[in-house]
Structure formats: C-alpha cells, structure tokens
Image (cartoon, rainbow, N blue to C red; front, side, top):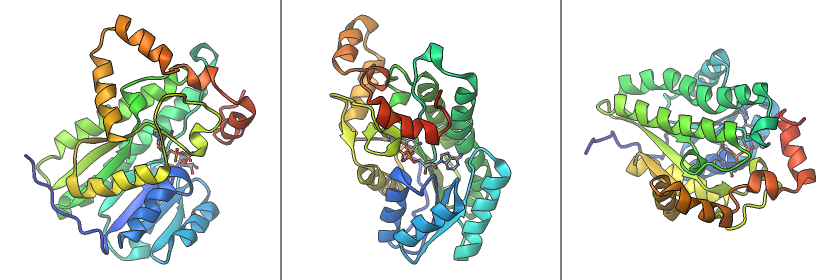
Length: 280
Ligand SMILES: NC(=O)c1ccc[n+]([C@@H]2O[C@H](COP(=O)([O-])OP(=O)(O)OC[C@H]3O[C@@H](n4cnc5c(N)ncnc54)[C@H](O)[C@@H]3O)[C@@H](O)[C@H]2O)c1
C-alpha cells in the first residue's frame, strides 16, 4: 500500500474551484470548520469574495476561470500569497452540466463542457502538483460523478467529461504515487444544487452538498482512489458496468435514466441552462 504524507487540516491551505455556490461552497465551509485556510475561486470575483465572507475569517475569494491557464495560475498564486503558506489541498470542483438530447446539443456547448470539466482539472494539476511533489506533501481531489460510470440520457457531453475526468484522476494518481502526494476522485450521485435543478431523478439517490463536502474532507485522511456519495451507489454503478446490456435496460428504465430530458421542469431548468450559456 502506497503511503502518503499526512496533512493536518488545522492550518492547512485548501484551494477550491467553483466554490462560490453548491458543492464547492459546502466544501469550503467544511474545510474551514476543520481549521483550514480556504481559497475560493469562481467566475465572478465579487461573488467569490461574498462567499468567502460567509465562510469565515480564514477564507478568501478570487476570480477564476479553470479553463484558462493564466487565470488558474493567478488564482493559485493569490491563494498562497493571501494566506502566506504553500498549497496543501486542491479541490477541482468547478463544473457545468448542460442537458439536451444528444442530436440537439450544440458543438460549442460540448467544447465548453469539456474545457471546464476535463481541461480545468488537468491544468490545475499541472500547476499545483510540482510544488506539492517538491514539498513531498499534497492532495488533489477531482469532483467527478457517478455518471462517469452510469451515464444518463440527455447528458452525453457531460457523461463523457466525467468518464474523462475519472480516467485523468486514475492516470495522474498512478504517475505521482511515490511522491507522498495523492490524487483522488469523488463520485457523487445526484446532488441538490442549481446544476441539477429542474430534473426529477426519481429513484436515483439524491444527496445534499454537505454530504459530498464531508466525503471530500475525509479523503484528506484516507486518500482512497475514489469515493462514491452515497458509498453504496459506487458498488451498484460498478456492478452496472459489468452487467449485460439486456439485463441493465429494464433496470435503467425503472430508474428513469432519461430523467435529464424526460422528467424535467423546463421553466426551473431554464434558469440554470441560461447561467451556463447552453440555452437554445
Ligand atoms: N449537482 C449534482 O447533481 C452533481 C452530481 C455529481 C457531480 N457533480 C459535480 O460537482 C461539481 C460542482 O457542482 P455543483 O452541483 O455544486 O454545481 P453549481 O452549479 O451549484 O456550482 C458550480 C460552480 O462552478 C462555477 N464554475 C463554472 N464554470 C467555471 C469556470 N470555468 N471556472 C471557475 N468556476 C466555474 C460556477 O460559477 C458555480 O459557482 C461539478 O463538477 C459537478 O459536475 C454535481
């Protein structure tokens, strides 16, 4: 078993992308409560600063576009300068989830989704890992998704991005395994945030952002390769991958795997799709 250098959360510096709302904000709160210093990065700098003020005195807010290397580098530099310490934990959380039937989705929306959900974590790791490796201490959490194992209809580009993010995580984890630094994936089921708004997920388990936040914080201690939230859904998703399609099809139908296109309150969903620029 590979050993990773322990990171005491009291006094540690944690940078979290897309943390002005949703899972990222809950994660910022959880790390702050554990005694860490927290740097929040999000598209709107003023919104990030507001979020940081609501988290506490050891939190700072910064403007960040994870798909832009210069912006990501400036965010990490500002995080270290503001708190006067090197980065211990990076949480690649920023993400978008456009929803539409595959044949109706636009190419530019797919491109943006992949740039934010896949290239973003890749840039973040290329920027943060060298310093962590030099210090022999660090942990990266990539917030992936269970759709990276169990794809849902109406989310083709998003599913693809989360399969990719999981593959990226496993690859980099293996390459840095002997440096004391770890890379882990969190795979949440449906989470009650704006990203999932308007979709009735039916029997698919739904959790709170705080449940995911707890799993992210705990990963600093155990450093497991991947953690599903809730835990039992991870085993079910793995089993689904090795079950013949003919057996899975009725299960998928029962579980409403078409929820993102067939069980939607369009007027609620429209607000989110407009925010991420994927509305028609
Ligand atoms: N909500 C769910 O059901 C669910 C399930 C599984 C995984 N996830 C993943 O969890 C992560 C967080 O999602 P959430 O539900 O909190 O969504 P959210 O929409 O509530 O929050 C995401 C945040 O990311 C920010 N963001 C978007 N693009 C960005 C960019 N280019 N640079 C910096 N910040 C950017 C947004 O401004 C927003 O504040 C995402 O990666 C998402 O794919 C969510």
